[in-house]
Amino acid sequence: HGKTPSVEQLYELMSTCEREWGHPERMAFAMRVFSRIEETHGEPPVEMYNYMLSLKGNGDDPGSGSQEALEWFEMMKQHDRVDVESFNLMIDIVGYWDGDAETVKALVSEMDDHGLAPNDDTRTALERAMKFADTLKKDGRKSWQQ
Image (cartoon, rainbow, N blue to C red):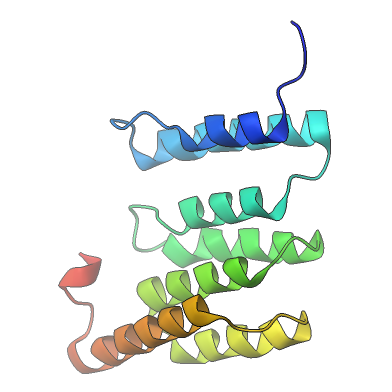
């Protein structure tokens, strides 16, 4: 069996999904690699948590889009595995799926609680999320979510 693959190698493996795979297959594959990292290397680095977070936030089912991501995000916080990128992803995910300005604002103030400063990506994500929230209020669920 040789050496255990490094975290980097596993991360690379995790993000090389077959293009023709649907979201569920990608998710299942990434989860397997993730567990493998946990088994062999202990707590995975925050990048991998973020990768999983973005996968969970990119589902095909509008109903569960932000729910799965939110659960994962909570778990990340418990493991103390959140960075600015994690919050930016969540702002995008919640903004996109829920168009929920309140939750988005809450995420931003929570960054502060974690001692994280918003960066340019945070501002971009925020603007996008607010635009979605606006569209949702005015026009209901629009083409961007079909």
